[in-house]
Amino acid sequence: MIRVAGLSKTFSSGWLHKRSLRAVHNISLEIAPGETLGLIGESGCGKSTLSRLLLKLLPADPGGHIVFNGHDISNFTMKQMQPLRRQMQILFQHPDSAFNPRQTILRSLMEPITLHRLMDRGAGEAKILELLELVGLHRDLLYRYPHQISGGQIQRVVIARSLTLEPKLLILDEPTSMLDVSVQAQVIELLQHIQKQYRMAYLFISHDLDLVRHTSHRIAVMHKGCLVEQGNSEAVWEQPEHPYTQQLTQAFKAFSSIMKP
Image (cartoon, rainbow, N blue to C red; front, side, top):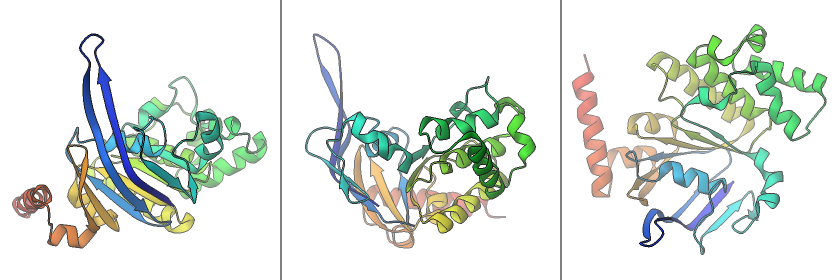
């Protein structure tokens, strides 16, 4: 579904004395339809920057390539990207910030349908009701405001809104970090069900290696802007090759053993 080769991003600051920071360096990866690639790494290693580069929300440094669904979009302009936006969606870490607090949930869910002119209002509302049922929410919630529903409910609404556009690629940027453990499990189960139904490609970004291990087919480990290891989830967990990955797995295994009753 998406293939990336040699992708980098350098940020510059200062006027008289320019300083440069290479946030992402020479990244190459691919995600197939129906597959989840887990992206793991400590805070500040470049995971979120990479996700925005994949969606071309940030311009990459010259030389890298992004191929999405068979099309090389490396040099696409914002205007050329517009028809593809509905096929590439992202769920951010703070779902409550994804909504206008002055709009009802119904109006927020209708927004992408109206923006992309997908269907008339009647058909749009019918589509929304269908998606609400899919994510396990009642229609009464449509007339509430974001502050009137729980964190788990708002995350499900965010998922429903992304599905209105029927995307082929969904980037999940720490989608459960703001939820308690029981709600996390429900949201993960929902995402896996949706993936099987629509055969979407997922990029699952997290700093929780154990969570990524259980939700992803493959794992990519990021450290200081570089991908230091990629492989099958169980292989990376059981036999990590890079020293940084070895430190991560040892830390998580030690923590898990302490937490066991």
